[in-house]
Amino acid sequence: MAYDVDLFVIGAGSGGVRASRIAAQLGARVMVAENQQLGGTCVNLGCVPKKMLVYSASYADDFEQASAYGWSATEPRFDWPTLLANKNREIARLNRVYGELLDKAGVRTVQGTARLLDAHTVEVDTADGPRRYSAEHILIATGCEPQLPDIPGIEHAISSDQAFHLPRLPERVIVAGGGYIATEFSGVFHGLGARVSQLYRGELFLRGFDDSVRRHLREQLTLKGLDLQFNADIVRIEKRADSSLAVQLKDGRVLDADCVLFATGRRPRLGGLGLEATRVQLDERGFVAVDERFRTHEPSIHAVGDVIGRVQLTPVALAEGMALARSLFKPEDYRPLDYTLIPTAVFSLPNIGTVGLTEAAAREAGFELRVFESRFKPLKLTLTDSKESTFLKLVVDARSDRVLGCHMVGPDAGEVIQGLAVALKAGATKAIFDDTIGIHPTTAEEFVTMRTPLADRPS
Image (cartoon, rainbow, N blue to C red):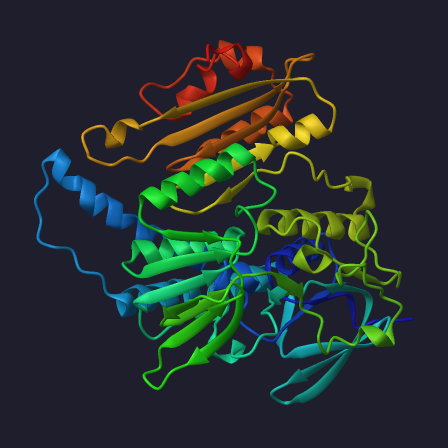
């Protein structure tokens, strides 16, 4: 059978765009359908605009600390509309860049909402009416969307999507959630001058991160004046006549807010996709089930990125998209994707950077450990009154001396950990860390100067 294209991609986010470009470069005829802006969540409502907001919020500390270094300036003023306008201009530029990248690769793009009619046919609702396309292979790369709880008054709350487009900076913000997004937005709003309470229904936020990291960040955020409330769950939101919000908690307390942001989970974006017309199946969590080569139960249909729910990070979606393209159109170059030792960062203020096993995970896996930790006031803050401290941790296999995990809380943690991820991928031992000459004076040099394991330190 002759198909219109070799690969039809539904979704022009990180995974979809990467798969499209690589497939086209390998000689495939490729088409992409997208019903929003090119670039997906990362470019439009995720990583990129979020990091811009984090940068903006971080200036608050810089202004406060500048006087210790001899700088004298008038009282700084923040303007939310200016930040949003500049952010929007940069996102629009990136949207154009994505379009140009696809065009140069020879990928055809169609604007509209796509749905599956069968294993080889996609219909796209465009501004000019429905269009049908046949494809030898179809890729689902639709990503995820925020999931809000079903509670009375939830219509008065927002998700992170709306947070990027608020008409004004709210004075009192409640952020519900304990993951990346909640912790990052709490820091953003707090840094920009709002009174922020972050509520999480568990004992401690950032589940899955090293416990020492979680505790250290809790201490640092509390020192900065951010109100952290654990074992706290919202059950109702009421809007008052003055447009303020009364937020009722499970324990009976009522908190006042001007904005309530829920960051309590994301679900795969599958509504209206037409999966019922195919043999595609979902896993027990509701994500698209795929095998090692990202094939669904329908052999001609594949899926990558957040929609498969493996590791929901942009660089992982990019790697999955590249692997899928090679699997289909240059199988001799295909290599299974390695999901171990994936570095990540949380752009809280201060940042978290981490790669490898946490101490708890390493012990659960049966390793005998040597653990190294360092807490100190970074050099930049020594002339200031700031109480902020940086935290570093190494988790080492006592038998092989191999470094199993590196963890950091402090400025530019992501930049530091990215380099250490290469070392861990290469199998670096603690002896190699010890033999490495540090760059002085830096925070990163502490990773190669920690000598005494916790158990050997005097009590």
